[in-house]
Length: 475
Ligand code: SAH
Image (cartoon, rainbow, N blue to C red):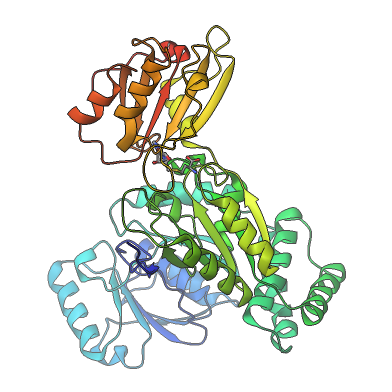
């Protein structure tokens, strides 16, 4: 059975609000009220270059100071608001008393289609103000959709610490130099590569004010792209066994610059969340015992995408070089002259051993560690397994893809002389939140599969070293 690669529909989970960044330069906005909250909003709006009108019958010192500022356009309308004040207004923000007033204003604003925000009355708000990290032109907005603004403020402080103030200068320089790149006839891909080089430099020297040297470097990047347009590439990336924290930094970087991601269904959503939003995701469904794409189709797709200039990430569960058909994929890339890179990942056996807090090569028990697949090309037990080695009491063995053949494996191990009470541990969904662990023995391990519905990926670890695993609550 085979199925074609299918695009995954949803790239993002439901969003409470849409973060958009609205340019207000020169646009009239109306603020109603002269309370501290209203005046802070007026100041915030004025900082974007908006023309702020404040409708408030009474002035106060803070209002007078704001109106007197040279660097802001703020005008006081010394009266209550009228419906006509809303004409041609980009946004209206109000601090009013009582639900009735709030409802009147919200209704009036809606009649003319002006988005409204009423302080502390979320039911009447079309939009909200997030917490802001300001490195203009680099701006970060944080919202909790009103759930807990204090959380947003705490996150803002964290981001403030993480985001060097010097990034402001880098973002400004990028804005000034953008026309240099836009003016050249370059592919989108080439432009992206040029800006990635710029961004890498910003991360290396956040405190440097970009000047002539950086500008020259940008121009050099442009020339290089003109001479040598960006070629596509393939990276075989290990996604680890499930817990996204087990991704390598290199894997995250690859995911963030990918154009296309081809992934198995073993790869968890939490891992995919690290990918660049715009990256196309294609499931290749390489899961044992289920319909999946043919390996040849995957190879062909990967190569053709790379030849189109795409940066392809071939994302595989665990480590790509362990039972991941990486050999065929690397060979296909080499044959097609496509650049290929491998980014290793944590294999299921290591993830499971970490959960069990057990050394796979415990000095007292194991002199050898062997990873085997119990799943040959035809789905049956491979007939060339070396049972003598597998039954070696001084080895630890990890069986990948062993689910369907476990009973036969146990029989053959016993026939080869392995002790029936040799400890074996089955770990389903190792390192996922839904991980389950079953401590058993060679003699009884097939029964564990029969008695429990183990639908997830399972790794079987056996050998004397497993006697050192941390004891488990019964599952
Ligand atoms: N490259 C992967 C292995 C791919 S073969 C790696 O290095 O881990 C697929 C098999 O790996 C599954 O059938 C299962 O035996 C094992 N496996 C992968 N992820 C697992 C997980 N999170 N928990 C338990 N076993 C897993």
